[in-house]
Image (cartoon, rainbow, N blue to C red; front, side):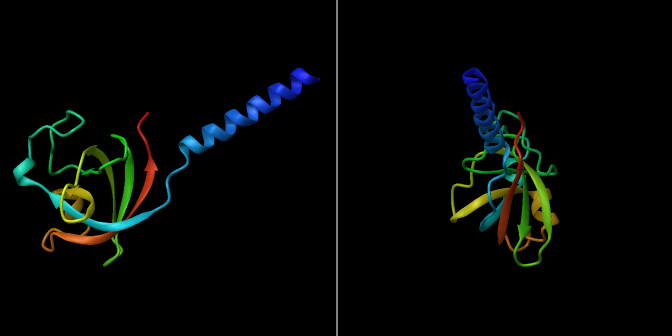
Length: 124
């Protein structure tokens, strides 16, 4: 009986830890900016070449491969991007979007916008 109880507790702990590891983080809000031509073709922090026409983004802490939904708080448009770079490093921004992602949110001409970020998944 004692072994069964220990097995049950171990399984419960494992399930709790596994569910915490895959639960998306809550939304965060802040300023988003974008980058494009000047960095097109250069290596990103994860080693791939930056393609300004792909739906990617730079974030300070999210793991590479993480997919996030970025929603403009101005016009409610949203886009799903993959984190492949580190940044942003200026202007109190929380995320730097590729040109393609910024275009989908209509923030290219403004240069920045208030957004919410919702973590969807991480690449394993």
